[in-house]
Figure 1 (cartoon, rainbow over the protein chains, first blue to last red):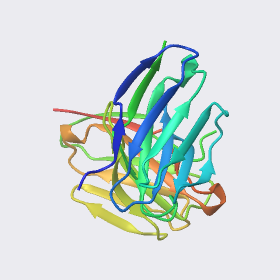
Figure 2 (tube, rainbow over the protein chains, first blue to last red):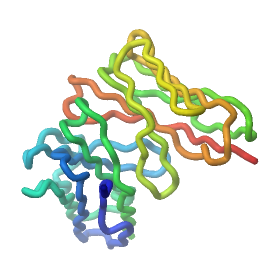
Figure 3 (cartoon, each protein chain N blue to C red):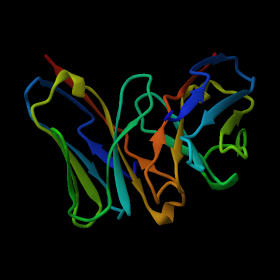
Figure 4 (cartoon, each protein chain N blue to C red):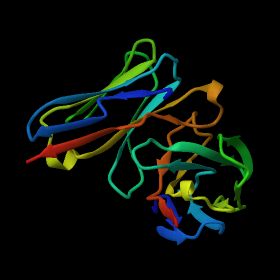
Amino acid sequence: DAGVTQSPTHLIKTRGQHVTLRCSPISGHKSVSWYQQVLGQGPQFIFQYYEKEERGRGNFPDRFSARQFPNYSSELNVNALLLGDSALYLCASSSLLVGHTEAFFGQGTRLTVV
Amino acid sequence: TQLLEQSPQFLSIQEGENLTVYCNSSSVFSSLQWYRQEPGEGPVLLVTVVTGGEVKKLKRLTFQFGDARKDSSLHITAAQPGDTGLYLCAGARPEYGNKLVFGAGTILRVKS
């Protein structure tokens, strides 16, 4: 069985641009969560989606948005990129809402904003 | 302020030594997960503990959840270079909604 897959693996963008990151959860999992990890820190929660509905939002600006599709894959969008958005963006897949079951992470997308 | 404090932040030891990593909080968690992360990769789940006082073993790794479910420890026996990585603890609480709260991590380097 495939694990959590994220694309692209690496991305370089210019300040002010927008970016779309993609995630496919483990087959059968209905929940996808997004986390941002900057160098030297633990992951910080951005969003959680379950059954295509937003079920949690972290302390991130409105430039960050996400959605979940009928096949449970998900996209994270970031508009008006800032240098501080440079980070490893992680997608986590779980069968139920995170906090009620284990979460499994993808390899991440390394975003560099220049 | 981190809700989950991990210590030490960095640990460099020789192959064969034992070590313990701590994850502490003033808050009670319904569950706590330990992950290991290598550079440029996503965290890999090692274990989940849910019951106060619970002890779980994974080969040379021993995980313990505190009786009050506020803290946890990871003990590695006879560390090997392959144990090198970033060890993260993450907790879940109903009050935090549907998310995991992570500690800042412990960087472990095992030298051969």
